[in-house]
Length: 355
Image 1 (cartoon, rainbow, N blue to C red):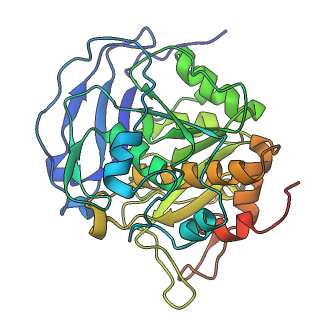
Image 2: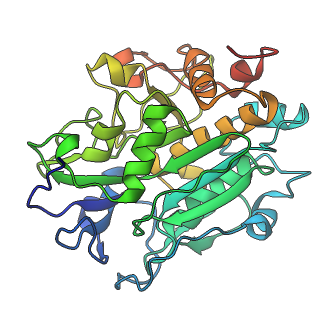
């Protein structure tokens, strides 16, 4: 029998904001508890990113959303047939495209903020734009895997996620579910949405790309406000869970990268270490910081792998990303910090098939 602790769960987007400027958005209540608060994560590393307009209002409908961003993607990164490699991307992406792998046949579902009046200003390659958090994360993923099917669901809905019946499914989670420390994930009264996400990770129905968080603590740890991301705890150990941390740049052997100052890290838990990847989040080029923008890179990579290894299961794709991560592009690599290492799309695509 599931219990519901007497506190409000807080939804937090995994973009990094300066502590002094963190603002929150009140959403409609969920889980039969008090209305949760959705707020952007905090980080002093986000001083250069400017907030656009608006401070929250209540979300007004609870319908799922499935939107094709191809028009916007074309304006910001070429077409799906002739995409443009942007400076913030790993050069491995261009190699994948040249080989014909752009995500065709895979479906990327972004569960994120698509309805609030909170906006972020950024630039993914062709000029400054002002978009909601979810529109940024989904656009980023679609620019990496431009031929993948893109679906969106607002994170303030409660309905279960709907997975595609054919091809690889990848679910991007650039948000957290915070509550006071001291509980277990099994005590949380999850909505049907989170229940379905957790089940997909446990049953291997979809690759789950989860932003690690921006508190500069170990995944599953307690932050400075005394809160824990219980979604991280619930996803830990899922056969297709990938926790994604942020490097300050894309690493190379000649110029190894370091963990971004805001990023959560793997920690001492070996289960988390074995599910943890890092990728570059070059906010100095895009104006977008946070592990929110690390997770979509992995989401795009997984979709690209799905377009090559068409019969591979989500578990096989997850393991391929983990097993081919590299440590030689990270300065002072440590499994307790960087988990399996920096995701390498070129290495993951190299074999003829995956096991």
